[in-house]
Amino acid sequence: MKLLNSAFVRSALGACLLATCLLSPAAADGPVGDHVNDMQDFLDEYTREVGWLMEQVDGIVNRYEAEGLEAAQPEKVVDHWEAVKFHSAIESNYIPLYASIWQGLFGVRQAIEGGQPVAEVRREQAQLEQTLWQSLGAVKLAAQYQEQGLTGAIATREATTPAATLIEIKQQLDSVVAKYAEQLPDEAIKLVQDAYLTRFEGVEGDLIESDADLVEDLEIDFNVRLPQAIQQGASVDEVRAVVDRMQVKLDRARELLKEAEASRSDVF
Image (cartoon, rainbow, N blue to C red; front, side, top):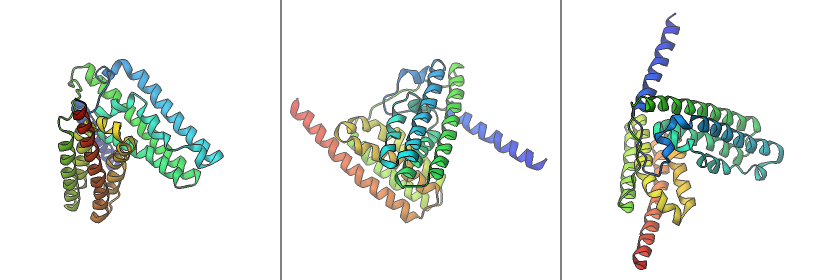
């Protein structure tokens, strides 16, 4: 009986935590479609999109099993994910699951690119599917709260000084390492998520025009590489190494944004 009660308490606490997150939707800096403020009417579409996404991933894995790496084209998992409306629905309402989806997608991709046995790739695929269904449930719950007027509108905003925003991101990444060194991994993860959601997304639209590959690489850093290093208990030096590589990329991003701004000034 004690075990049952303990399990019940953990389940209840988890539900309460999820509800708290959904009652306080994350503010996104990037463009967000109108559907995010009318999710109840889009639940069927979100459900179809999740099914479609899983079919695309399954196709990639099947091709890997039958024809090998080149035929599988595992890099397309990102294109498929970013093509669906559900992408911004979960991102705007529950960022921890949003990051988990990224990690799941790249779990499949990296397993294939690393030449792992099909059984290992299927294991990553199963974990991704579980996260996608969990995320769909979170969006459905958020839609109920939204219908009841318990959540505010999800608004977007653009960074007014992109170069300054990137400096703030670099400073926040230094804080991530500091928190991790203090043995506060949960706080470190929250700082990573905040840097991505409330800062980087505000500048990535402009940056995509200059270097889309750089943007994708940084998205992977924010949502996969750095969170995984923290969650897997990497050493402080290893976490710092990930951050150092991100800092170099962010410096490159600042230079690109400055060049783009200079070009616009010359035109006008």
